[in-house]
Length: 418
Image 1 (cartoon, rainbow, N blue to C red):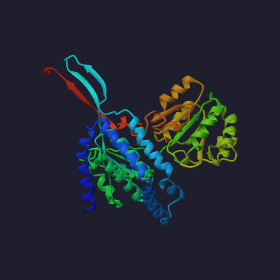
Image 2: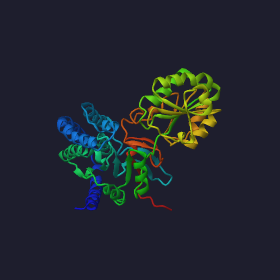
Image 3: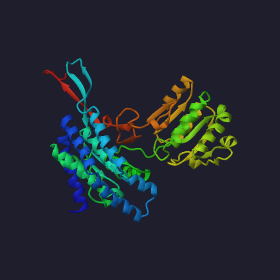
Image 4: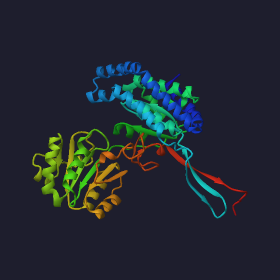
C-alpha cells in the first residue's frame, strides 16, 4: 500500500474505533491502562534494545547530546511511563459528567454532558515517553488517537505501540483506538493533516518550526502553543528575597522547558537594590544576562539587550532583563512580546497583583510564585498532553477535561415549541 493509502485507512479505522472507546466503561479503560503499564515493565529489556537502535542511528547522524539524552529510555523512564499510567487510572473519568442542569420555562430539562473529542492526531518529536503519556490520557478521556512520533525515535515508539495494541485487544477494545504511523516518511504528516473527515483535532508537540508547519498545513483544528516567552515582573513592593528565589527557580531549574522565565522585568524604584542582588545569584547559577541600558548600570557585566531579545525563547541559561516604571509599563511590554504562556508578578500589594492578573492575557498568571508551576501535574490536573495558548477550546495545560467537549442533552414530556 502507498503511504497515502495507509494513513487514510488508519484515519478511517480510528473514527470507527472512537465510537467503541467513547462508550467504554471506566473500569474497562483502566484495565487497558494497567495492562500497558505491566507490559512496559515486563518488556523493559526489549524496549531498551529497540531504543538502542534509535540511539545508535542518532549518533551516526550526529544528533546533539541533548537530543540523544531526550531520546534515551532508562530504568527511570520505564518507571515514569508505567507510574504515569497508574496515575491516570487514579484520575476521575470525565466522560459522562453532567456539568450543568436546568429546567427551562417550557418544562424541558437541559443538561450539558462531557463527551470525548473523538479522534485526535498527535505529531511530536524526540521523547518516546510521549507515546505512552498521550495514549494513556486520550484513552482515559474516551478518544481514539493517531500518533506520529519523530523519526529519531522510530524503533522505540513502535515497541511501545505494540504494548498498547496488545493491551487494548486483551481488554476488548480495537487496536485502532491507539495507532502509530509505522513509517518515517515525512509525506505521512502531510497526508495526516488532510484527514478532516476522520480526525477532530491535531495536537503538535515539539519545536516552534514543527508547530508552525502543522498549523499552516492542517485542515483540522489545531491545539497548540508556539513557544513560551514567560515573564516575571518584580514590583516596587516586592519581597526581594522571595523575588530572587522565584526568579532563580523560574530561569535556572530547567531552562530548556516552555515554562521557564525568558524575560525579567524590574520596577525602577527597586532596581538599584535588587538588580545587583539577583544579578549575583543568576551569575552563580550560570545565567547570561542581556540587559537594557538601566539594567547594565547595576549589572555591568551584562550583555547589551537588542530588540530581538525581548520576544526570544532562549531555552537556555540566558535571560533578558528590563527596568520598567510601573505595573502598567510591565503589562505593556508583556502584551507586546509575550506568547500567551505564563506570567508572574512578585509583590506585597494586593491591588497591584489584581491589576497584573487582570491585565496579563496568558494561559497562567502567577502571583508570588515561579512560572515553573504552569504544568498539568503541578496545577492539579494529574497529567497533561500539552499546553494550549490558542484559547479554543483549551487555554493552558490540557488534562483529561481538556480532551473532552460537552453536548446538550434535553429531556421533555411531550413539549413542543410555540
